[in-house]
Length: 76
Image (cartoon, rainbow, N blue to C red; front, side):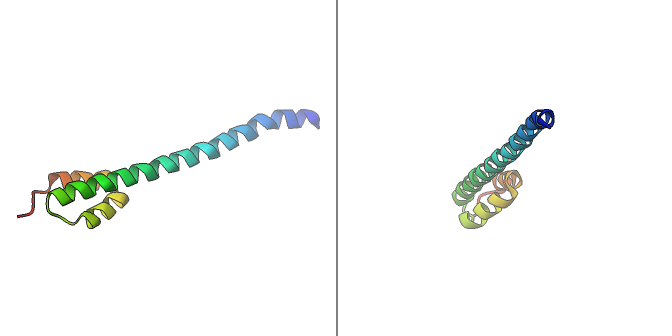
């Protein structure tokens, strides 16, 4: 019985490490989304478009919105 607990312990540590890494990855994704949203909002505002709209789109679609806001021409 003791032998079984000694062999199972490393597996439990690996599972715990997996949960922690998934949590860290989620936090990094959220931080990246917020940064993309802020950048999209600033670029859109400088081009004459709605900062709120492009900020929200940047939060949701990240890089795609950033590419779109960089490519669209300035509003006249």
